[in-house]
Image (cartoon, rainbow, N blue to C red):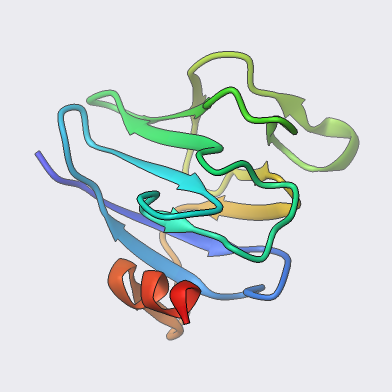
Amino acid sequence: MARKLTLTFMSGSRDGEVVQLQTAGAPPSISIGRLAPCELAISDDPDLSRRHARLVWNGSSWMLEDLDSSNGTFIGEFQAARRVSGPTPIKDGDIFRVGLTRLRLGSAKDKRVATAAAAANATRS
């Protein structure tokens, strides 16, 4: 069953941008990385691996998982940040970091919402 996932960029060149991604697969998931075929490609982050992390719906909540990236995946901010070592629960409003990019999970009340396709096209041009 597909699920909609909203992420807000909290840093970098896309700071403030909100993306809504349609998940696919069983279980529903999206991958984050520097290049396609990641559903969320962030090409301008030099610390991001090609396939860096994944968000997976486990039936009741989102789980954040590092995909053996070079620089790790972290939940929380600054000194309170903890490195993800396996599938880790993440809740609405939590901020996580992949490479140098900080993202917030959850619903946004921002009018700058882009579809996954528009976001992908923007990273390719």
